[in-house]
Image 1 (cartoon, each protein chain N blue to C red):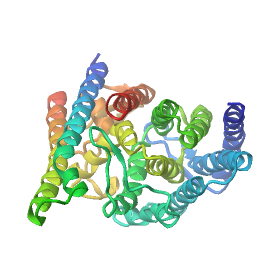
Image 2: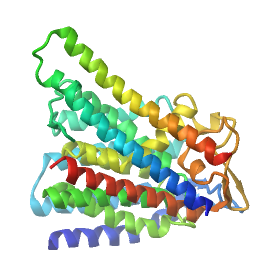
Image 3: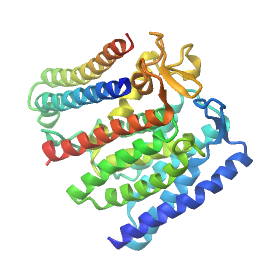
Length: 325
Length: 77
């Protein structure tokens, strides 16, 4: 218990100290993005990812030093670092071809297979433990592009990635406590402490963005935790708003395309007020649905998205209690 | 008020998707997974069950997307 409290404190203090440093580094290296929803379009550093990575990795490594080595946690570390690196390269070089990016993210799943830390017997509602020996490794590789891009695609408003991820890890924390899972408990606590600290800088009005490195890193931690500790179903349900957003974007844009390639934007912004684009050909996104026929401020929209994520987290825990025990 | 209505509509959509997921896994429990777990039938029956399972998942996703599109159209009208 004390170890967990120390880990939370370390993660929180690290992110609080590191984020201002990375805000300065981002400005110095010109690793910035335009906050397009604000009337004066401020330039914001998108270097939150490295701060998140260092805080989480330092705390997890500390846990391994105290409690002993774990191959499962090592696989999670390598997978998440690969995803963060892909995101960081995208932050540095600009947007990667949306058809190539999912292929690159497949590499994040390789450490899980190489270190053999997966169990091809996922636990499903009604079915219980099932055997997916041949299909499961393919699902492992496919899960990284899906989850990482889902987290990436919800990172469109100030603080949205922080608060929706907090909801996800709250569900993982609850399920870990209920089922007595030590490592997912530790990882969710570290992620919650880190994301809570990061949210102080990332919330409206953002002083830093997570960037692709941050969102892909968070997505990889989510996918790895779900796969290694066999809580795939809980993760899928907790990620329903993310999956809904990603799936609808892909379907409505008829394939993997960059939003910049699309003529019509999902939302219209006027003096800081956001409203859904009435154009029937505009991409279908969660933000567009929430702002249908209403003018909303960005921070209020983030609150609504967070409520949706918390609701999904509740459904995930409910599924675990009702159908998987 | 409209934002509340929109949020509640999406909560309803998420609930439908969740119930759909539970129903899909229930159906899969009786189709796809027995085919994998106990490959005692002929290859054709096993294959047919797998196709049924995959088709059910695809139908769930398509249904969810179609329902969302209809809802959005209603919300925008």
